Length: 98
Image (cartoon, rainbow, N blue to C red; front, side, top):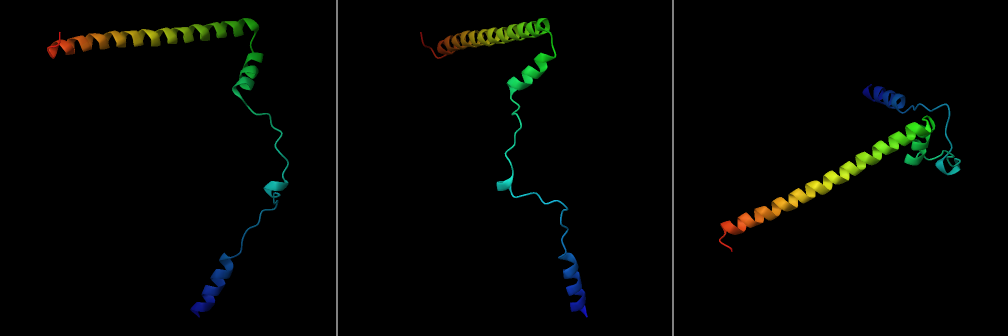
């Protein structure tokens, strides 16, 4: 009697649900004709919604922020180099070097 329950359970679980629409294998699909979304395409989309004055203003702000970032990097590098040379002199004095 247990074997009949087992066989009916296994036959019930082996039934599979099939989708109504079966997609063709990947080799038969047509290549995608979508335009790739690159940063240049996105910038053009956003730039088209702004006036030329707004675009110039945004570009100018971005330029000055970039220049400020570069100057801060150079300034921090000079300060670090100066502090390193001062630290090396004091270390040399502690070690007894002339």
